[in-house]
Length: 235
Image (tube, rainbow, N blue to C red; front, side, top):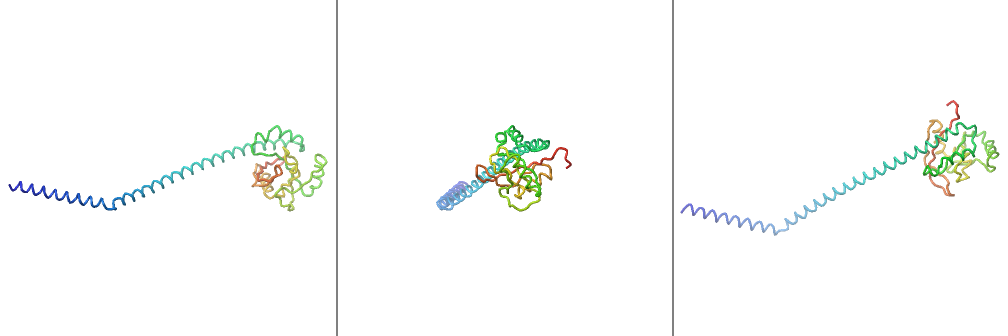
């Protein structure tokens, strides 16, 4: 009788405890604390997910841009190598010539198909160094041999300052801009620096950005200079 009474009392105590806990749970569930926690957790997770996806997108964009830049650099490098090879061949051709003949130069450049084979190239020119004391006689000789209207003039973007040595264009092929004949590249510091560097180093040198005239319009360009040394000359 005592044992059964104790079991009955324990069961009633357990039932009361379970009922009290259940009521407490439902009271807590009816408060805004639990939905607020869930909403806050959703915000935190959404923010983390957005940040993670945005970082991945930025990393992907950065890798894609790096790939494009590397591809462009390689393409430019290959083009520069092809330009240098063409000009080195022209340098060898000119080094064995007794004098510069415009008809011969025209035939040589036409065989190269410069415009077709070298995209971006507009012309191949021959520049002669001329001392200031020979400037007038040199221009007179060019007029006698080739063009009666030949004159030496300041290059586009040139400063016209006096220089000890002049670098005058005597051949241009294809002759898209006849006014380029007689242009003195020594009057443009950027051109003159590249020419001096190519002559002193004995290798191709690319100028900084310069201005050229094409189709009666001025536009930005670069000039690649390759030195020509007379065959057998002491260097």
